[in-house]
Length: 506
Image (cartoon, rainbow, N blue to C red; front, side):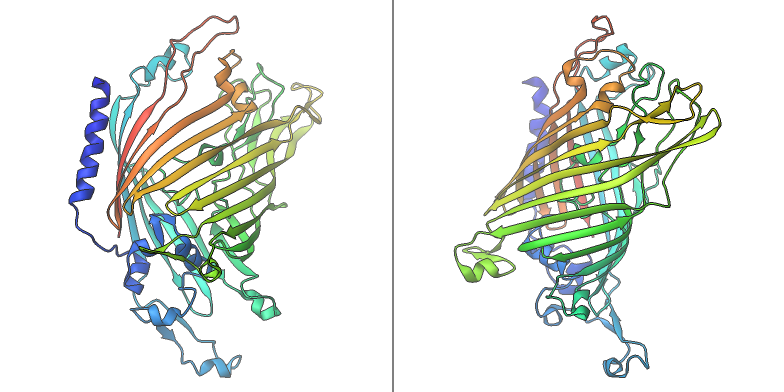
């Protein structure tokens, strides 16, 4: 009970802050332009409600009568009459009437399990490394810009200026142009074809880049990196690609994310670069590369069934309840597939050998929403072809197929709005990976070693529409480390952690 007092006190403090705060409107870029609250598009920022999904699908515009809702008119780049003179003059466009700039910052406080450092006894971590019990940590400071240039041309750019404090640099997140409803030029049905070009997050079932959780979904960050040491020569895979990685390329999409069908097809650069193993390599590594001669492919299809009884409400962007707009009752089912190649180069007997190992990621997802309750999850399977050096590491002249490197897993999460400004969260993550098992440096770990799972309850409070406080507790199973003879070489330990977050957007 004594160990729980800090968490209970912290929860009560966050609740008090939320209750005592007066109602307010947030003022990020779109709130400024439309004179509305962040809650118009977000359930609990950055989680979108139905209207937010429709706003995004339309190219960062209101799906109907956008001009009548704008409080800050756009700046015209040319006279409207120039449309009739095109192509003999430049086709007129617009830019937002105010600089569409927003900022986001968050800071964290973390408490870790008492026996968190027992893993050092097994030499699985640097013996000189000490993990503090409690820690304050700046999080992410980013700037983002988004809007519409007219003619259904949307844009988005976000840059992480700092990550984790200590002057740790971030980088470009998304930066793209999206041409909405280009299918109209080919006489296709409305919204059946749009085009996005630049750097962007893949059209995943749930967005890791704009998740409202304090920690990411483990399956999206899973890479397939096997050991390349003399102890485990059977695996020669070093693929650093994760589904959460940013992609550079082109994407075709259509339909809607708030009703009916939705699809996307992306053609992107390879993003599989890794680092040489720190152990004994089977052969000197020349490097890990992307293959510019091949582009990776990603496809997704989903269908959403809106389940409102009233037909008129069912077909609108948002259903209306007794207390005002709310999300539909719906069931969304989807699937996705990614195909690529990872490239590795080694010094062989007769020169440099290049291994181009095909890999794929395959998964399915669902989301069910009923009033204030949202249950959703996904499953993904990863498969990398394993090309090993032939006939052996010393006299290699080529490659032969070995046992593939695979992983699987996913998550199940439930969000419930206890009040319009309070969200309760319960989440379960699981990842099972053959590469994770092999990366134990030849020792026999407990059965949990190849499977990582955790329960993560949490609660989030909107102090204002643009200021949020959150608490998350990550519960992981107890682990024990054994040597190859079955002798325990470390005390049982846990890596449970409680994380509190305070963030704002402006």
